[in-house]
Length: 237
Image (cartoon, helix red, strand yellow):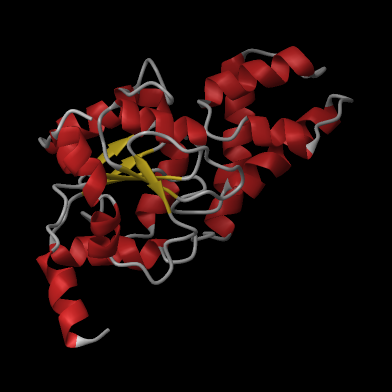
């Protein structure tokens, strides 16, 4: 980047915090979830299509389990279904951490700049712990998992809780999400949001801008992209 471009980038303010979705945004675990769902349902004598699996993306784990129980021969409680799926995904993730392109680099940049990171995921703590185990201590200043909130995404509660734990205003943060459900959660909480479509498309949403991916983007690039969202919110538009 030329000198003028560098000066402009450095003039862009940093967010109070970056609030990260995990599955599909930080790490590409969606194929792991889909594989575990397919295997679980096949063992029960049912079938599970890619379209079925895509419908679960972004949902809370309990809601996903309820859908599986309603549509397939699988039996048990939603909690039992979650336990089976989660244990399989944890094992796969521990064997191979599937970072999304550019995500780890951006995470490291935030930490280097002293910008707090929060993990806001509908996965439960055992899977989040696998991610955290492989990162320097303190990379995430707050962690909100699906088993910690009564109302998961698309409710704003997970993002509001993350901001509360960090002691920052949601409007001063930046959220990164890959699903329509997650985007609705973040924007409903009043967090300027960057949508990074991956497994499913994200329709245009007030309070969100989209990028094709995080690779090659710095934190101030994302803040510049969301600048108009912040102006509109301040003006009440």
